[in-house]
Image (tube, rainbow, N blue to C red):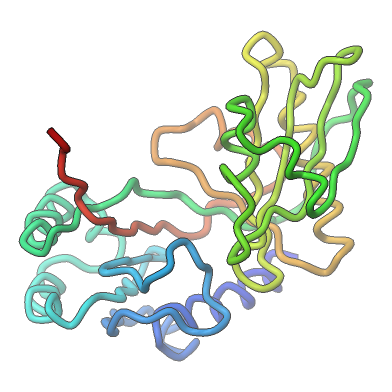
Length: 252
């Protein structure tokens, strides 16, 4: 299972970073111009000014042409996972600031290795496509769902766990690229540590597999609670990525 998903990932990253799968397999450093090619994951209306990823060997970078001179020099010192060290990121952000941009959080990304999970005796209910709209704006589900319906990466499935009539947890997935379903999970504070997060993520993963899609999972660097849920479900850390965003000026 993991090998198949990894093969799909190589093709996806090849699309997103404008390179050949062989470049990724060979661990090459790739520097391409900013683009939003058909089939990419869509997180903004415009191509990223700067983004990069590594599977631990070479580094893939997509960046505005104005950054290429700096990045070519930077890659002589930092490559692969070394480019994600704080010293390197500080230098990159300093360069980005010249153009009004800053780095986003670093994300650890996971692919499914072998599906695991636990069986619990919670009532569950499934929601599909636009049925999910009823939950938008509910801060309890800020990780499981997008903040609103997004045509570019719509939420496709959500599954809730209940204690009586109370929703105590929700797992949801958004289709970030064609047939690529990213999973998110929210568990009410008083129910954390009971396995309900692992239970729902496992159920949702199984449903995504039945559809023939690719389930994947991402966490911020320090979110070990979320990471542990993914690991217990059988996900495997596979790649790391970071993006950029415009610096918003404070309004007086």
